[in-house]
Amino acid sequence: PAERKKIENPVQVLKDETDRLDRIVRNFLRATRRKPLRFELGQINELISKTVLFLKPELKASKIHIREELDQQMPAFLFDPEGIYQVCLNVIKNAMDAMGNGGTLRIQTVRKEKLCLIHFQDTGVGIPENKVSKIFDAYYTTKEEGSGLGLMIVYQIIREHGGRIEVASKPNIGTTFTIILPIRTEKLSL
Image (cartoon, rainbow, N blue to C red; front, side, top):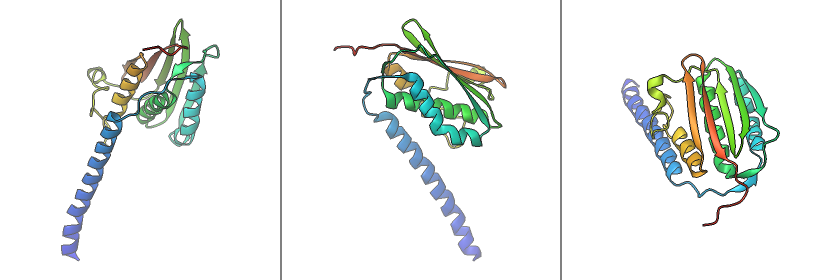
């Protein structure tokens, strides 16, 4: 039995490490082999509410209160629903991780002329100033189980929409991710 224990422990460590590396490779392949975006006329507020609804059980379990302040005058515009859903999912999950002891996540949409601004403001631990510039880099992570690909994918999807993403953070106060998307209603001809 003692000999068996001596062998089982390193084998388990190898198995765990293999699983971890497998997850990283799968995430990398998913990040690099994404389907081309399929732009459809859609309501961004509906997509945000659908994402929040999907995450409701996790948010509740994490003691995170959601405040949706969605601009009811926001027009339908062209975006890839699957891509923007993934963006919202990643940003909300990051906010959840930042608010380990619960908190409030305020999600706000604002129309600014031909732009749609989506603010995700959490009351989490914040991001140190020297790390903010690295968060969109591939493989940069502060999470033990993280792959460092989530925000890189978010950045790519937003760029492919002709938009941009901004981050403002204060340690121990919280972080705000602002996604800026162009409001287009006609597909661009090549």
